[in-house]
Length: 230
Ligand code: DX5
Ligand code: ZN
Figure 1: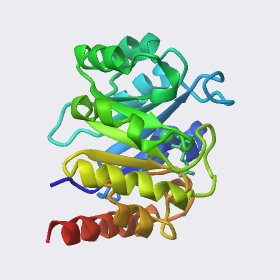
Figure 2 (figure 1 turned 60 degrees about the horizontal axis):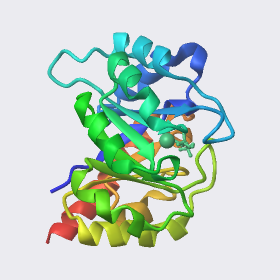
Figure 3 (figure 1 turned 45 degrees about the horizontal axis):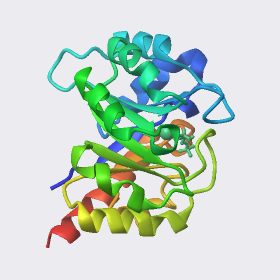
């Protein structure tokens, strides 16, 4: 059975206080992952940050200890093969490349695994879910974007949910991540469709009390998983 996972996107944090902001969401006790949005200004029309920031953040959340925070690296970059080594060295755990950014997903997946990272593939809103099927057995996770990648704070696209439903029906044990516009108002359809990894930027980093949001998101996903297993 899949687990409910909340992966707050640091894109919505105050970068001048990145460490404290992340600590605050981790201290909710609901957060086991951090979602790190790397953008190159080419695959998407925005630049965010890269491996140096990830490695700085890793110093605050070391891989040692009984429950290290998983660094979920969402690579919105052209030529995704270029950055695998850097992200591995910086302390990433999972590397999500975009299907649209490569002609050869198989060799990217192999290279990611060779570097000891979990391999995930993301699809933009215009990409049909069927494109994922040939690779799903090799992947640790599939990311179904629920906004156009590039910016935080956009509106959740509920019309992506049939893609999640189809994928969940075929792969009951796969981690399925949704990213973009997720919060208390939009979590229910995502959880019902079968997503178990929830990226949330604005909804988690902006409020004074993140715990209220993270626990709501997590329990909604948990209940949906339970009701599917009956
Ligand atoms: C968008 C990024 C998202 C974004 C989500 O390109 O991939 O991870 O930060 O932010 P919210 O939750 O604010 O939509
Ligand atoms: Zn993302």
